[in-house]
Length: 134
Image 1 (cartoon, helix red, strand yellow):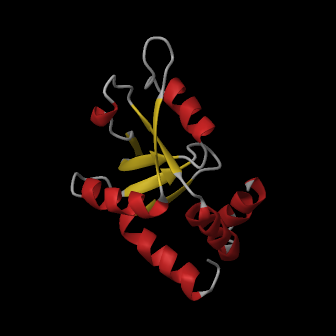
Image 2 (image 1 turned 60 degrees about the vertical axis):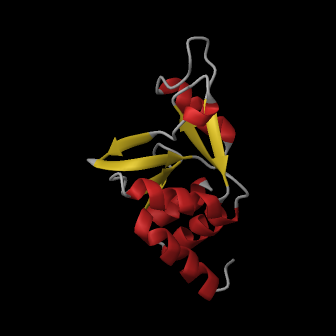
């Protein structure tokens, strides 16, 4: 994955497609939340990156837990709350938070992270299907 990200950042469009292929083929996406005793009150973390409100998502639960702890989202004893959603269910959720001003989704926060605007995710998926990558 690190090599794909490096190639994508250098302008390799095929590597970028492969990153999105990997992303959409995952069974779950993981979303760190501010810890709440009642899980039903939990909302995935939205942060601001380059002045843009983005939903932070991760490709595995351990990365999401690490992020939650380093960003102060855990409770006093270090417990984290991570929601997991299928890519399909995430799209439904994204449609609802877009109305609140969130413009994109950012995967795997850090130098190896990647981003898409909410409105572009369906187009990315459609393109991958047309090219028979998924």
